[in-house]
Amino acid sequence: MAKKKKWKNLDGIVFSTNQDFDYQYNEEQEDETLAANEQDLRVMLDKKQRGGKKVTLVTGFVGSEDDLKDLGKTLKSKCGVGGSAKNGEILIQGDFRDKVLELLKNAGYKAKKSGG
Image 1 (cartoon, rainbow, N blue to C red):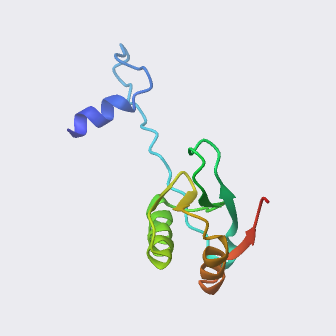
Image 2: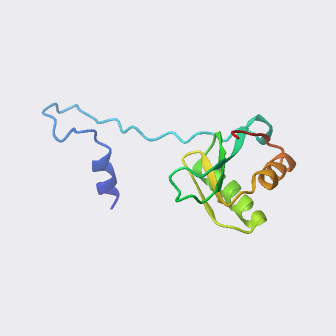
């Protein structure tokens, strides 16, 4: 299985006639998570392309996917609803802007309401 992963990272190189050729793998660098007081988060209400359903969207997180998912899990459990966390955004089902903003500020994050 490890060999299959290597093949995916070769960027189109299949064969080289150079005997000294050693392919350098580009390992993805994971962002280092900023401290809570250095994060600049935006909390907004979104209902675009969601069938009219409202969601609370937290954007601007800088850090690893694991830390993002941990924060998302905490917010979802405190609000008692579902959601997701990926690509630097946390999505909470329903309109929980005020509660999420309060939770983030209590955790030490710099957070602001954004949008209408």
